[in-house]
Image 1 (cartoon, rainbow, N blue to C red):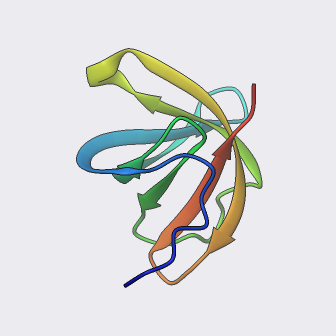
Image 2: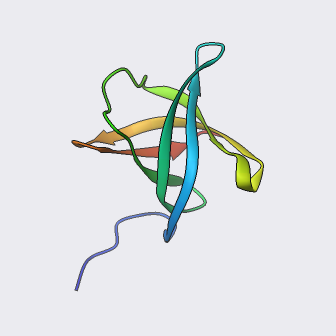
Length: 82
């Protein structure tokens, strides 16, 4: 059994997203899971992705300000800033 340490439960997803920052710069990403408070994003490389950015999920018309809380080889975890 895995302990769940998150504030809000996450649901698994596989949606296209964009990491948008700096007045037009963007990286493509895949949203792997999502909750009310954050998400896990799959990226080609976390290099060059800033600590704060906007996650854009066009299919859901979402623009979510984010702060990176962890980075792994091809994934980053973000917390949504309100």
